[in-house]
Length: 198
Image (tube, rainbow, N blue to C red):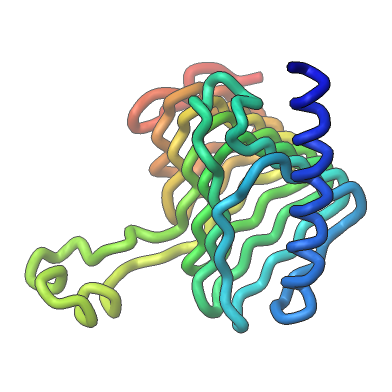
């Protein structure tokens, strides 16, 4: 079984590298060295979207690679005119990254299983505007997310629009981050609050 898993992982990492390399011809994609995605990733971007990934990138994805994720497929979606910028030595486990404006992830970041990082409300907060699709879309608020260097985000966290997570901070599992978290601290809860300075 372990041998078969290793073969499947190797095959999927090669297939994903080839797929993203082909996409880079049509879209604004830049990949660093040692790019590895295991499993089948839900991926969508547009001609005006931007995706930049640094060296030593790893995305474990479904295939029971991480038991916390319950075999969920990860997702990267970049809306027209939006960008996802990922630094070096970043590891992600079956997470959802959805950019309507911009998501910036620094170097040496770890994003735990089944997290959601989304820089938009996705819908207007005004119920009248939500009644009509165009009005809903035009009145949806988005704001950049920045995750600085050496941050660790625990499993099943949700990082919402406009948040900056300071360097070296730890976000505890299951946290909902609605406001910025400074550097060098541990935050957890819903909404996430600082519980310790490190």
